[in-house]
Length: 291
Image (cartoon, rainbow, N blue to C red; front, side):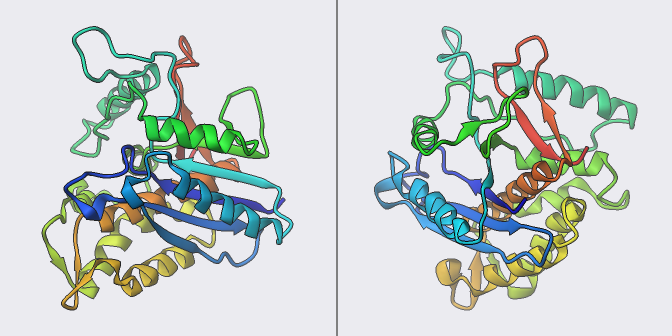
């Protein structure tokens, strides 16, 4: 069945007031149907920081409308943000708190890392998911009004929303053997540390491919998709300045959206894993590419 797969890096609070480069959502999609995959990438400029998430909602619905013309009925949207919790507020005296799924992932991750001699920097730095960001909650409500449903272990929907975490995807790709032993974690994660730097064409291409190439296992077409998104990045004038590209959110948001897309592709083809606390399954989930 042709499936519209969408990866979305959503600005939890519409970006930072002081950092215009953070005031974008990045949405990347493909229609997975067994043939050549054509990538569609867009930066959604968040006018007034889009507090009601209507701009990104419209971008998703536009993709859905275009996909219907290709007889697509199944949709998987992978969003890089905490989506669900049973806890509305953190404990007294705390501003943020971890959900059960985040604690479960962290405990399992430590056990797995210990068996291979330690994390050596590959571990994901988990952000606490409580409270949920109001802008993300609003986006979910808007999508649920369009018959989307948040992932559930025992329920299948033709319009599905899953939560992903690119840092977890990178860690799991390493543990599944998709990054070479000779590659150091800081080398792969350096795309997150380019703020304030002016990057050349060659540097952008190298940084992007270093992290994304490892996800080839999600689709035979992945190398083509990586080439397409790298070309798009290099043609995008949004972050171009004096012949160089501004490192920071305008780079890492696209890469995170691409990893989120890889999660959607993996899930749609049965190649994904889920972190969910079996003792508290309603307190969130995190899905990643790879079995």
